[in-house]
Image (tube, rainbow, N blue to C red; front, top):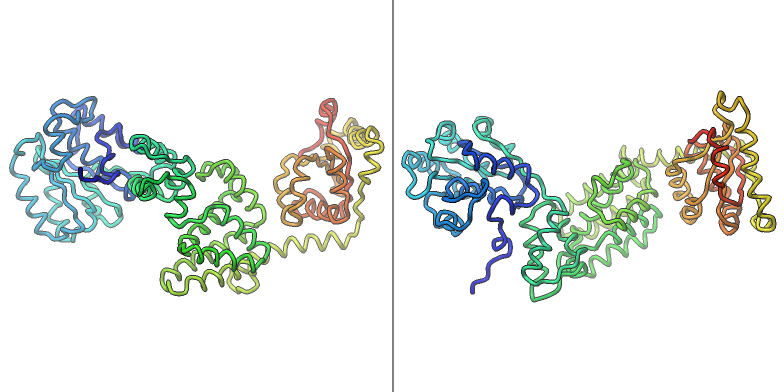
Length: 529
């Protein structure tokens, strides 16, 4: 039996089988069921999203002998003849190959004749934007007022190239890129039907690589399953030459740390594995874009197709960069990809030089590089003001706290409670403020000393109203000991100043013990930062 490509074998036969285009298929079903069809349709959208498939389904639906709720039955002679391409009254033309006016003139002459077997003669013109100006002019009048037994369906991936006169005479539908979830669901269904083992992570990788095209996803899946192999995430990476998010994250951290050795090793590893550097570079571009989204939006998950571990890895990596740095570095990545495509012989050199430049903005005199350096200088200027005031930061020794836990637990809340109980606290807004959203505070700590990030997450931080004092409540003596060290105290002081929570020279005090539930009601008047 002759082999049939999976994307052809599993091409949808009805509107209900089409994935990810419900906003279009629901309208087409409604119009087909009630006989309220337009004389011409324009299907626009990226490749592999179902334009030609929906055109063929619509051609069957309008001619089917026994339609079911607007869907073709798929069993009658007319449906079967459209499926196997033998229907003479359904003409599919590729405008990319037939751009001349003569082909359109032939169609214009044919429309005068009634269909041989079907109810309507259907003309499906794919990649219609490729027609010449003369062909468009020849099509215009026929498209505007075709006979009742004729239906035109135009499909294009570049609707902006169509004359406005053509677009205005059609009912237009815009096909969207298919979501990762829809592609994964379809690949899983095909894998079950074909008895092919498909890992969920592998399906997600294939869906992302397809960039919203179902046909591309199915083709990539068939490629990875070739030779009877199970389709695992590792096999997908090997076949498609992708390195994964972990590699991109390590490269990003090496850029931030200025670790040139790690950057050269990353490029060398890609080259040694015979993977295309351009593919690796596109992964870096996507990773930097995702970091920028995470940095800019509170609901970044709505714009990113990531698993929970991937989202956490992305978030933690993005905290090491400022927005100005990400924009500058993203522009460098984009420019380098253009140069790689223009001069592919020096891809490796371009990759290495760009990564070094990204890690050292001082090597670049462009406006974006200057802005990236300025964002770092702003933090340093704030810290210079802190050092000039030279107000000492104090800490409670962890061993002393462990010696008398009960006293240390009571001390800070007592200080806070005594001040928040005052009648005038409501008028003054309270003398202490709680840092409720510690995101920026933790981000600054991560940029100064990444090791302390995990220790600060479980703490409560209060800052006096004048910004001169801060109390950090820690859950255990080990954390207290870590934060009480001189370097850690300096990091806490600098981070409080940089995030705007305290004034330069703030005095920081470490207190052992969590805030008890009974104390929360007494601290309600504390203003939250």
